[in-house]
Length: 155
Image (cartoon, rainbow, N blue to C red):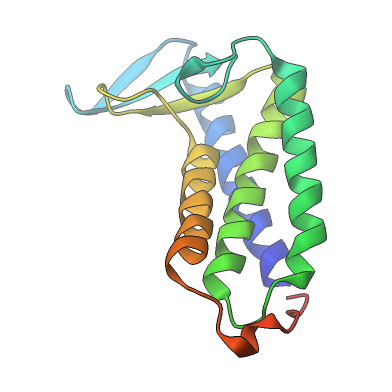
């Protein structure tokens, strides 16, 4: 249940922030929060991170659907004593669904966090990066203990 709750919270926060931006800002508008350091800038991203693979919407839809399906299949089989693995899966799934909604609805993704020296991003992107970081950390630096082979619970 925690997985569904976390993924849902990420989706709701992501979509609420995107709705807020779209309903209050004109496309391309930028509002400085900390001038020259952090702005809220409304853009639509037709690609992935850093704008790569522009206008490949259906490719990203397919990748997101496969990722979500894969996580949904694997999650119940994760060891119960690996909470960071489960946290990463929940963040990754919520972020993937958040951006998937945009791609299906708009054909591109709403982005707005603008640190001026970095590509503009959104809540879903943050959760995807944090989810991947959690998964990578567990897989690289937390070796499985002999008793962690037991399948997890569906929480």
